[in-house]
Length: 115
Image (cartoon, rainbow, N blue to C red; front, side, top):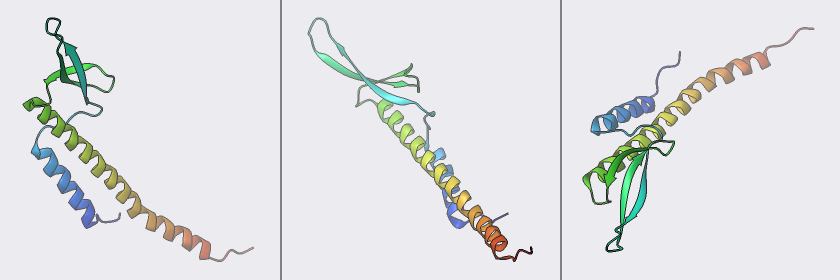
């Protein structure tokens, strides 16, 4: 087994730090904007809601100035950043395994074959 590189340790620590910061949005959740119109005044209002990956309503967030809007925006940003870091971890794991695979293949190519 190939030992972990310092970068892998850094990524794992970064993921742990982000997870400790606060709420992490579930995979596929998004913030959607919707509008309503007041029948009496005719004014249009914009609101936001949290929806799952199938577009189903989960939570009413309020307007873009609400605390809940900021909280869910940050939760989605944390989720997206963690997803990127985990993808980088996968690539590093593959890169660590690749040299040993290449070395094995090169050794097999160099060894003489007897007929």
